[in-house]
Length: 256
Image (cartoon, rainbow, N blue to C red; front, side):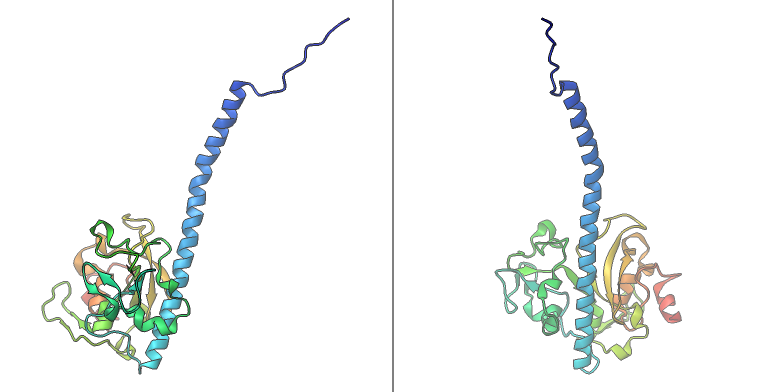
């Protein structure tokens, strides 16, 4: 009687190693793609946040006779963490920032105050870094605002501060020569990608109501060409914050 030898149907060690290697290669290829998709989703959320914030600015302006929100010392979109409140937002650097928060003034015009939270900064203390200037459980800050708008700054010789002044009072929209160039809010914690000249971008919201993903140029150009800073010190005569001024911001603003 002839017997047949049964063939083992299992994987050999070499075959298993090959399968594992293929899976590892696919994972290495796909994980960066998944990370990029998640980051794009966070960027889309940030852009949506800015649209709602800028809409709140514009409605506020209508209610207050054309004047931006602000006042002495006001700046930034500070908002409370889970253990803070709109009346108490303590910090180690700046005391209770509730009275100076622009977000508190915009709050009546925003249905969901979660828009003040940057999706890339889930704890709201990313800007503080290792200094721990504030604790995200009580006080959070993801988006900055233009201090020159809220406090009436004018520094026509910037970057020299000679001849400059701050009135402490917010300016009027009617005073702004080019509202489409004046940034009102910025994504101040997260940059995409960080620290790459000619590539780094962040989200900005503008006084004419539009928002955009703009180049972040100021750290990479001379002071007298820093368009983002110029528009904070001279909000009545802004320049495009996504372009370095040519030849200087003072001269470019004079042409606008």
